[in-house]
Length: 328
Ligand SMILES: Cc1ncc(COP(=O)(O)O)c(C=O)c1O
Image (cartoon, rainbow, N blue to C red; front, side, top):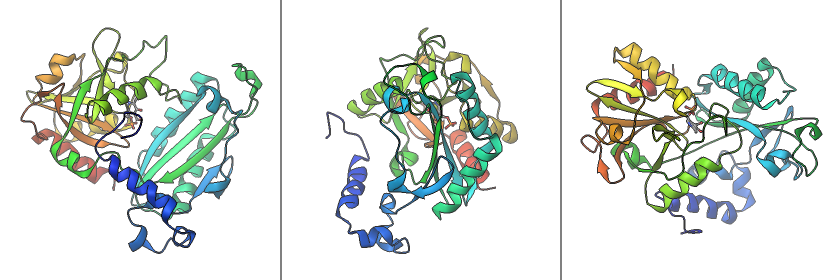
């Protein structure tokens, strides 16, 4: 229990944290010593792409005057790679450039350079499978809000492992609660922009954690389903796969898009439709999609069982195809 927060898998996270402090440097530098540090991947010294070059992790530092630190001013992407190949890299970088366009951040690197830098970071990681965090910050300025005082944005790219949910959740599905925090209207905070301002999602995630749930369902200002804190949501009803349109306040997820493509390929009817809590509770199946979470079944909402209470057959077919697709 930390600060009133406790969630499944926390012990696993804490174990890794302890390892960081307990393992002598000797182990930290020995990348080859996989048998000892297999479950403590955070211990390996890694290379971070930082403003144009790969540097050691300890040298990758941002300023306390960067407006990303002071105001959450910036944007990011979460990307995965499988067997050394980055999944839908260009789609991610298009989304990044759209976020920057919206936020009026002038990227010092071209689209091609950002793609190449991402690949370079993956290659330097020595990992075959992993998660990339690409962050663009507004840059160093003064203590005022005005972004004009931040002449140069910064960019850094990390390639590491991520394990969002314990393995059993992928087998048994996760539970959802409905958050009391609503997704704001786009004129308040545009959900299509993957900005560094995640407090709305974090507030909802805290509610889920405090209630022992795997994720929080987030409604929009009209009370319709938008998405979850860091995932898009789908239901299956009478053989049709349904997800809310982006206008309901969901991020245009790249995994969401991949799942829509998979449905077309497998001949499973798939549509975008406004959904409410009732539709989720009375669905035959429900699953979430996100780069970090991939495809995971949701089997209850606010204590009501969804479908059979286990990952449904269509969910499993989509998951199986997704697992193939990412390695093609
Ligand atoms: C709020 C939110 N919704 C949905 C998603 C899923 O998007 P993607 O599949 O591109 O990771 C994410 C993850 O980035 C997210 O942060």
